[in-house]
Length: 153
Image 1 (cartoon, rainbow, N blue to C red):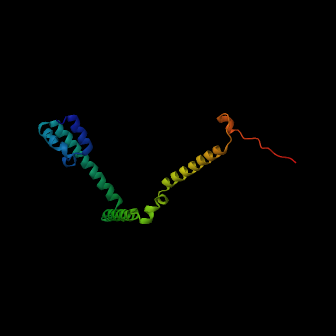
Image 2: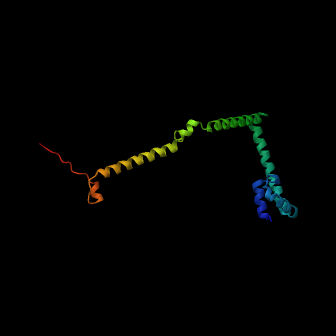
Image 3: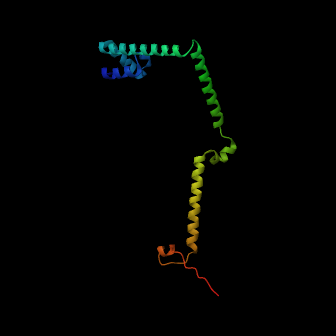
């Protein structure tokens, strides 16, 4: 059952016309309206607020736009948006070349691949360096540089 508190919250959110309310609560709202004068008062206040906002919007539109220009501007806006959407969807279709070389078109993935390649190179260098190192008694002495034997004749 829809409470008056919830009814008020819905009226504040969706306004005074029940068509705007979520479909799952409209039936309960109509039942509450039939039985509660407080609910009818809440809905009439929401309707009055809706009308005031619509009048303010109309006044604002009339002060900014000459008659007929608002509709033309809205049509231009819609045409521009639809053109941009069409262009972006055309660019979004990958070609066969981009399927094979996708890292070129995804720079973040390319950066990760480069970083992983550099890391593997460093690890391989360390591994190779330790393989050629003479056997030492412990790990710390292995990291110390060897003394170079210079033969002076």
